[in-house]
Image (cartoon, rainbow, N blue to C red):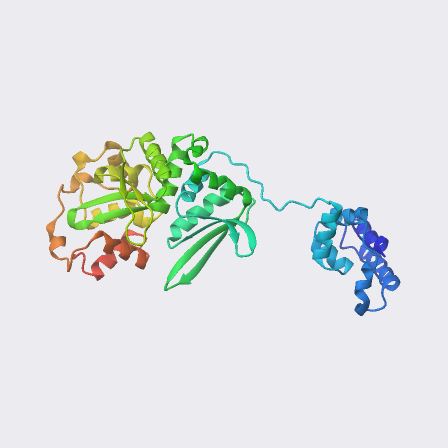
Length: 382
């Protein structure tokens, strides 16, 4: 019986034209011959494995088919039986591990930066052992940027981008199953200094900082004080010190603040801050962000609306050039101080918390949407 089953695959393998009538006819003849010899009806199907396949036969079948389930279906037995038999015989199966050879690049640096912050590196999931890299966020731009970067880092992997409605708002989840990538990223949480071998150029340093800022950073805007500040936080002091060192490498001047445990939080929180809004502006111009509510675009739109202002004399020359080329901002037409007309028309004080909630809850992504909502809630008057 087993010899006849093997004949089917040998005949199919020798003939390249698998769809020809001759091959189909020959295959049916061999299969029907094996049926009439071994069993009388479908009810007696398990009798096909009255004798256990030898190691040579199982190796030959696996080399031709390459699937335990398909072998089990043909021999009319369970896939578990075939799997256990292959372990006993010591037959090597094909590896399901996705190949991953880390090469320094901007995308890899961004993935490392995100892994130091929001991304989840899970090893166990309920009863099964699963090596998974996942990111669950509310910002679509962030999820799409991480999805593209991971897809470029491991081109052969199956990266998933899912969108779900949770508690009235959309949640985006990027996930990937890769043991090698999880092990690779876990080493940086224990010792961030190891990332130095993968951030060799300035663009790669910027990519890593951008990934961390997208994960753990936020833009603190205080319109009543005409100020804004970039902040990044994490409970791992080693990570914060490493990001600070990278920021100093690209010519920025960050400071570190410490917030001791209080309330439900049992760990000390460390912050990277920029004391001046002009230093924050330099950071947003040099590093930037993929998320609108954390990016330079929001600051430019607030300046355009008239809720923020800058003194051109205190802005760095490179920043002025970037603002003029990329955002078409002409500081010669702007006043050094902001007009009080818009401030007097506010119904209540517009704090940084309210602005963050407005941008996050309404999913504002450009200046047109920002202006329309500001008018609607009475924050600006034409």
